[in-house]
Length: 388
Image 1 (spheres, one colour):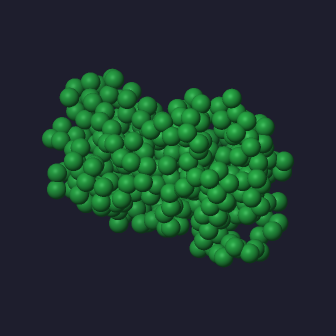
Image 2 (image 1 turned 90 degrees about the horizontal axis):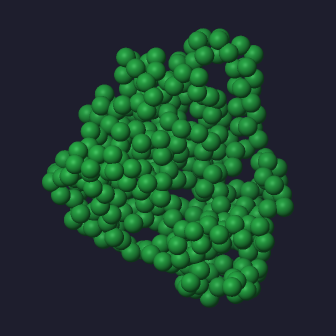
Image 3 (image 1 turned 60 degrees about the vertical axis):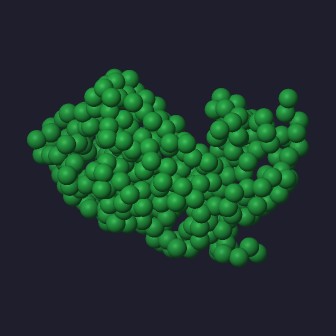
């Protein structure tokens, strides 16, 4: 038995509707919604379809507010300064669209940033003439190196710094509170992309002190997909412009952001059921199990490939394993390799490219077991060796 891995969940995979012939080692990308939460959402859909007018016009705003308070409190965020949004990318788009960027302004990100965020920043810069500056960071920077590099990239024209709390492609944990504190004297706004944080790590959003923080609950907090929280500092709340103007425009933030007419709100309303599931299993038990299992998976797969894998941050349920040189060296070949591993071996994993280095990213969740990673370690080396 592996220390720290809970063994009382032998039948818990039955609580998910995952394909039993596939080994799911990529919870970090899209999560997996427990059946109990799926059923809670379906009951809400049934309620909506039974009487659409009553559902949308009969107190839905109050239900959304109640849900937001529940989710924000779990994250340590101010419920009145938070808004429910579809995902982290939507939160980033809301912030970028509220900055009034001009030619010559700068937005700073890091090499570890999520690809869709990079694309959103590039699009905003293309529209406005602003500049996108990317801070170079090694695969395994120290906290001091992260803080110094970001602070050193800021100029008098910097309008926003975007930094990941947990970087998606590299599974690095960044010292976001220190980054925020280092930039506060210069008055530079900071947006924390915390897509992987809710549920995976304990967090005190208010304590981080960022101007903007956005995190998904559908990855590690068992919520239906399409559920995220955008927390906004007081000075920015009335400056946030919704992507779609609808009937709550005059109500101010957060209602003007949340209310989108006939949007399907059932993922948000069912999200507390996901937190109920997490709490029923035991928040700390789940986190400990997942982190220890991810660490085990990284060790056995790295050993099978004969590579050294960087140590993961304590508590993270994601780990990376460097792939042999020449494999997955760019986004296109990384996607191709991920698909082949899924189609030919039956394992769902994440594969990313960082500075020309292919990275296999492994996740761990309560439905995973040590033998899942053992099987991957047994089959992957020969598979990779046979690739053209």
